[in-house]
Length: 215
Image 1 (cartoon, one colour):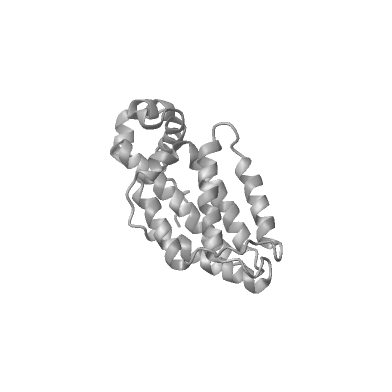
Image 2 (cartoon, one colour; image 1 turned 90 degrees about the vertical axis):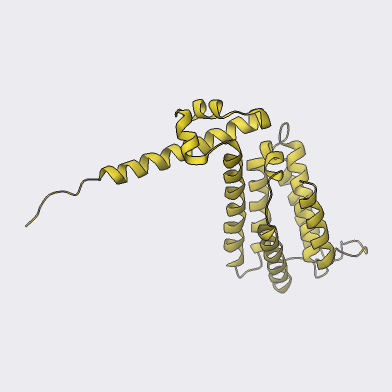
């Protein structure tokens, strides 16, 4: 009978080291891009990560690919948050999702302008709008928000929150939480909404397209 203890192979050790280095490079890229913006260089990112320049290029190919990966991570965070919120059955998913989006905005705020310059097919934005529509409907059915609230109102809130996070991240990085609390209180309060019409689904799509077009 073979009683030898299983030992990690060179291949598995190599994969573990590669994954660890990749994570270090991403963490360093977040820091350096936040500090230096578009002036950030691969050499500085590699030094901050404690790896050689060749390691950075081996994993990402260059600074543009690093920014693309950070954008992918941000989109993935929002997608996972939407999935978790949609699983709730108590009408609280909408608030949970909005807070998750706020945290995501805040986490990437200092280099958000670089992320916004990246081209995307808009599919992530469409999935977010679909999640907002479903979560708003669930909140309406549960009675956790004013019956007059629409998904267009919620999308307008998300766009406003993103702008606030980007504008205030240097000197008041947590102010978005108070902003969201105030607006959530307004969404909950019956009869507190203006008589002005909300954004329609078509108008939401048009505004979303204009935001993408300005990148």
